Length: 245
Ligand code: ADP
Ligand code: MG
Image (cartoon, rainbow, N blue to C red):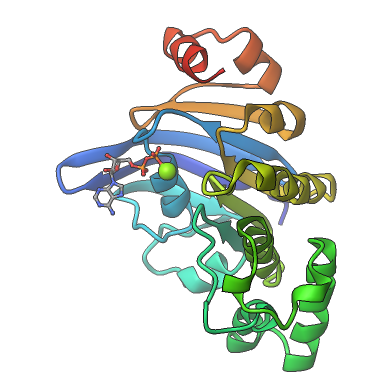
């Protein structure tokens, strides 16, 4: 089956109680595309990522992932979610496990890989993110930047088809932001499909194929980084950019 869009989200709504947080989003993401999502705090960016991989149940709408509507209640969400790696602002590593065990846990628990295969792949991934020497370290002995690179490697260990990042550098000291963005840039160069919520506009300009500006649960404007940052059409986008740039 030929699936042009890796992800095709149709009329996505999410309520928390009476509060409508996502107000009918339509977003298509092609294989290999890097999409950066920006917008004010509280506009629904995290909820969007979490609803997209079914960590939150959509109230209404469809989330086609590789041709299957994973919002459909009859679908095995876990099987599809394995194919979506997620990286959070707070690294969420397992503190009582070594770096290597953090990486091998999911692939072995799900039966995807044998222990030997998982260790081999984890070791390759740690090399890729520049942490080959930290396999036996525990998370709390690492810097924030190193922990976040481990978190990225851990997500990659499941061999995902898309990586979702929710403000991956917001909790880091400024001097550690670059090392994490560099890893993400390498991933983009390798052709990984990525959806990234970030306030790093320089990164967005350089790496994104497309920028989505979201406010109040709706997509206000979308386009190339150049179009959205240099010549934003909507007043709401102009105001937001004026505040942060
Ligand atoms: P952003 O990531 O853009 O800052 P969020 O998606 O975190 O925005 O939040 C959007 C809105 O949804 C906020 O009003 C927030 O309070 C609300 N919200 C998010 N998660 C929950 C939840 N689990 N329960 C209730 N309200 C939530
Ligand atoms: Mg958020």
